[in-house]
Image (cartoon, rainbow, N blue to C red; front, side):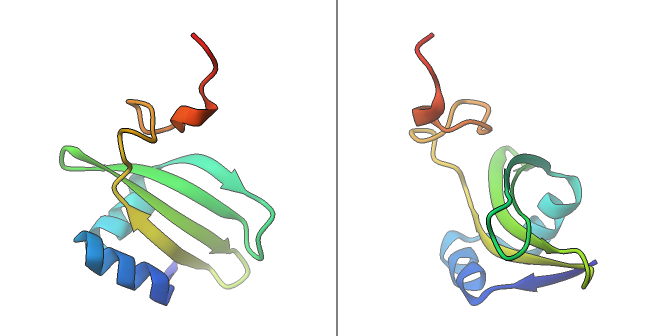
Length: 95
């Protein structure tokens, strides 16, 4: 599998202190928590733990080219995500 980084991804990774090793580990061992079918290539949001910190990676899969295109990577914000970092707070129904 070839990993391609969009310029946006590289810029944001640099700003956020996220390394290529972090992204690669997320792609290899992370959990797909959302899928996006309405893009050029099927996309997904991946959750991985890097040390004690969660990491989200947005990637698209070019299956024919055996490529994963990294769109961005970020540390999810607790104010926007539930404690498991799998669901957005605005998507949660009244409990």
